[in-house]
Length: 626
Image (cartoon, rainbow, N blue to C red; front, side):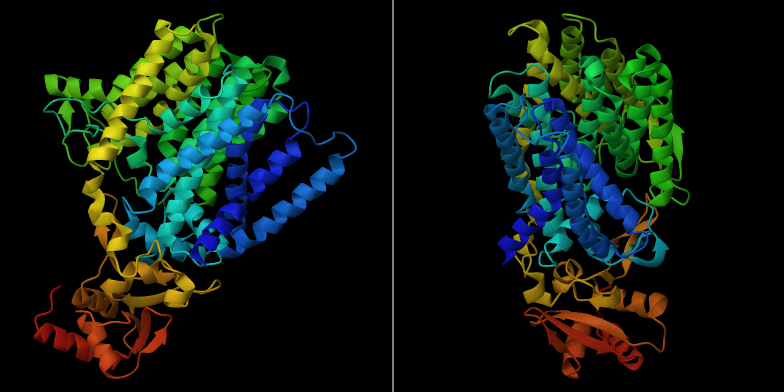
């Protein structure tokens, strides 16, 4: 049942992409347009679902969107049948198609190697948040703060909620986030491979290999005693950091933005604005609510490039100005419409300029660039990026000058590095890593596109290959030798295993549930909160002023619920494991016989005000830990 639910969710999620690819396929369809379709339709799909979720719960919006896409595609095909016959594109060779599929599978498996055994990064927050968002309209609440509007780049969680909904509520939200991560990696692999074939790659293997190398990007982690082996000093490899739910989606959207720039620069008049502008606007509009730092950097770089090469955005200078204005309006609209991090009331409270430094990560402190160690840490972090940028610049000058692309890449790199080394958000130096997502995707993808135009063995080609290989070597070394550090986040260490459970059988989860305020026993917390839309209590993350950590200690959780959230005369639902544990609240609840079995692993108990008062007295008297 679980495997079929995963297959169903992936198939339904990819339905719009597959349908539009089929609808656009004709003998005259250029290969670059197929490459653009993947990020474009992913963006349009999510923007449509989130817009609909302003009026109906998110899971309703998702379920309505699939037949709506099907009807729209059928209507389009019927309307265009007389004008253009559907056929296999002339520019898409069979080996190209097979290479794109191979890249998608390789990227999917690369992601699944980590995403299936583990629930990494902030899953303690995202697991209950995704399940809650599924049952809410926009603006979403924070699962740990009922009634408080959540200002956040929510799209990664929305995607997890879409996958969970399309599985008909069978899979846990942690597994849904993992599946979404795998699918996005696969889409990036396929889109990049098609783009590389569209712009000069001829043989079967270099394009998919380049796409996988893009996903193995990261710093060079060989710094001697500075920092820690196999990790970047100030930012980590993509394979690790992409487990923050919004990062792989922002990567796919950046591929869409870069593809539009390359098409406008390389194809010429055949690249009509009607083909590139919708993809650019859709990708950028969603990027603005997905990764605000990357959106700001790419918009500024596009504006700089437009000043030098107007046709990089649209056919005329005036059209380019209008397109840039539309990008700005789209960013503002999505922030306001979907309550993004940059909207009024968002979590960014302080932004300040500081002395140039290598900012460091969560594990390492900032190092001034006036110091030798600071310069060494920054050098090794940026070495793969700088090598690829050098190779790109040399390749772009042959056989003709690609002015717009050079200015765009240079602007992205320069703006990002200034912000990375000198801007501090909420007094937290590690937040600077946000400014490295855009340059890594933009520079590396541009380098891959242009390396095909230089002779094999040239210095430009060698620089790109060495930059990608150095990053990949560090990533693979981390994967082989340091992944055991994440054993504490293995999903199979929990009972039940949230990546192997059927929410319907285990907890009687169903679509259409309303959010409920509950006490949840620690032993069943992620299993239950990952299946049912729930409000629970949590602790504040000081840097952002948001409750992000579940409060799982029995006495502390019940005290917080009883004293801050639940009305004194209102009953409280307690969710307990269907097995003996050391949770004092559930032990007391089981004694009075008020608990009903729900599914195989859960008991639902009702705590009256008098029950809660008596439990709190006994727990305090027994010295229960807080």
